[in-house]
Image (cartoon, rainbow, N blue to C red; front, side):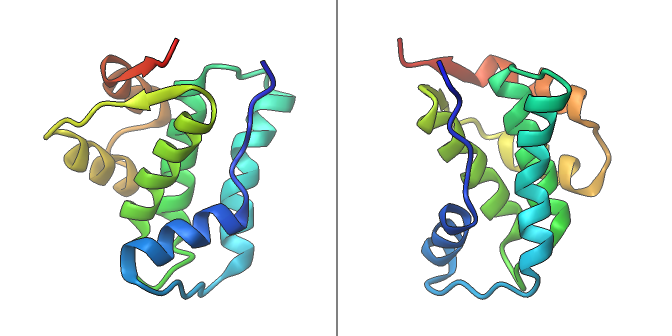
Length: 124
């Protein structure tokens, strides 16, 4: 199955749903954050959907491309990426803390993957 990656328009729409209006402060940072997942997939041969989701979470959250709601946008964007590719992230009370730690750099990508793994399942 060919993976479907997020677009800038996807993430801006998600941001607008969170805050009622999307305001991008740095489109270049957002584009860079989104391309990171594709680059890992194409050049590092990373096909693990959970790891690619983690790359989106960290990339979007750390990019600070929006004036507010970057972590929420990162989380919901990764959730949408999973959905586009036939996976879901079940709700869990620990997820906000996990996202905060990933955004602050307290945990790295591989640790984030370990923490997300039990909460992601395939629709099939």
